[in-house]
Image (cartoon, rainbow, N blue to C red; front, side, top):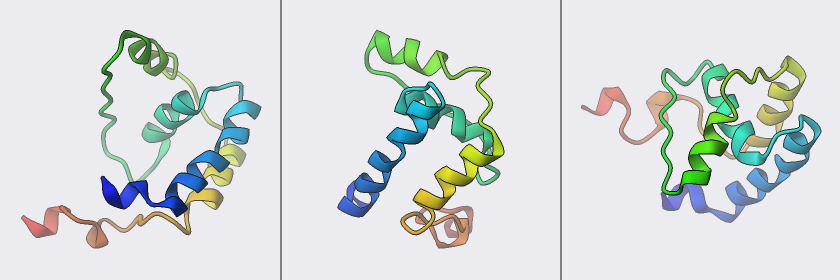
Length: 95
C-alpha cells in the first residue's frame, strides 16, 4: 500500500474530484464506476468497513462514464500509475 500512498499519487487522486463533481458523483462512486470500464481490470472487487460505504459503492452500479470523462481520468493518472501488468508486483508471471 505504501507505493499507492505517495504524495504524487494522492495529489492526482485529489485532482479527480472536479471530474467527479462534474459527473454528479462522489469520488468513491467515480472510482467504483471506473473499475469495470477500465480494460486493464478483469474484475471489480470492493469492500466496506462501514454500512455507508456499502451504500456509496452500490450507488456506482449501472453508472457509465463517457469517453471524455474516462480520458480525463487517464490524463490525470497516467503519469503516476503503472498500467503494464508485467511491471507490477505480484503479476501472474511472478507465480
